[in-house]
Amino acid sequence: MTKLSVNINKIATLRNARGGNVPNVCQVALDCEKFGAHGITVHPRPDERHIRYQDVLDLKPILKTEFNIEGYPSAGFIELVKSVKPHQVTLVPDPPEAITSNSGWDTVKNLDFLKAIVADFQNVGIRVSIFVDTNLKNIEFAAKTGTDRIELYTEPYATNYPIDKEKAVAPFVEAAKLAKELGLGINAGHDLSLENLAYLHALIPWLDEVSIGHALIADALYLGLEDTINRYKKQLE
Image 1 (cartoon, one colour):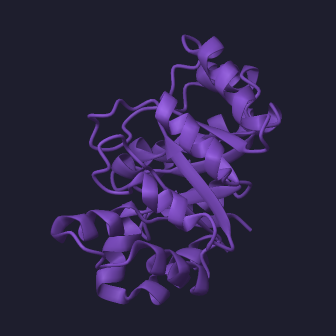
Image 2: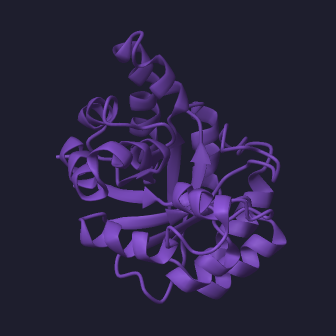
């Protein structure tokens, strides 16, 4: 079964809006696990506008499921991840000022840079995933970095799904087939929702993991966190 990793950045955003510790990021992460999530994802940024570096340190010893830390591999990020040793690190190319991840890596241009970082993390036992679009050349060169997995950047799929879902998913199926042929594990994330997740999974059933935050947390405002997580898991059956 494809695993569901819940991105809890939005919980931290809500907490930071008022200061203090409400809602409690660690407690929500534990609740997500209790309600059936297979993993927890966080994306600490240098300005700590949602998840803080201290949150990452606090979460590691209490989580029982997979822990995925995503972010741009700056010196500070690399140091944090290597000190925490999560199950997985997802490398994204977004600069510090970006509101959210909005593109995949140009793995051709950044091949040597990514090769070194991938090896550095793998040497301390951390699985590495590289955030990429559906450009087949970028997937070919992602494999050349030695990464364990890629994460398909699914915003274009989510945007075009209501217009023409077959056309929207086609490049992702092609990309996932190539990644599988190259021996890469495949994750997916960005703007996946209860509306579009099941169709993506039906066409790419060999996905290892989906990472979902914004839509899932928004749905939880209406449905409750436990019901929401169960609904997302059902999309992956």
